[in-house]
Length: 212
Image (cartoon, rainbow, N blue to C red; front, side, top):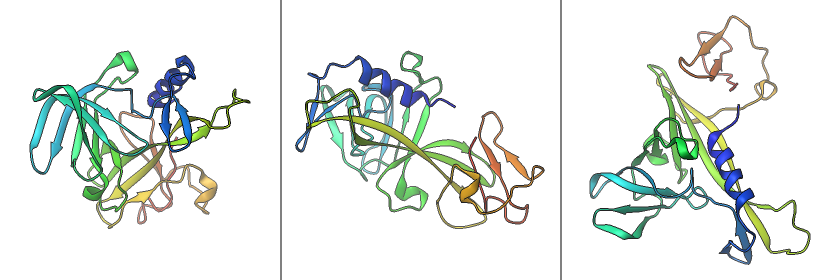
């Protein structure tokens, strides 16, 4: 599985000059922390303004801020800090590898105190699957001179909810972390995708889960 957002992030990093950096603290950081780049068309949903459609969204996975351009501010982006946006939708844009629209929900609306957005991957009658993107500052492998040079490294994690239980839980990617042997006949598939729930038992579905 190759994540399209990580592919786009790597492409931006590889084609960017080391002279095109952002200053973060003492570091010169190359690449991009914006999910699928900047100014993607979509919609924002905020507590004070409701829905804003047809805006251009730049979602920063490093600090979870959202910049946007709209009809009232076409030339200068406004910035929303974590907690000021309930959810947002980013339209499909094949030019950056985004084949399907994304819906992102702020963590407090999913039962977590984490100040991040979560992409809704699948919503089922019992299980719902979410994906969290985040960027960290990593070392530039080709740099041996500038000690202050860093790059944005994008990563992701999966989480799920179970309507029969409370909580918002992280999914471990490896079977070994579950501590239980998985029976081949006890699999629950997400239709229309490559994601699979591997369940220890029907009565305790999602007790032990992996992604493939």
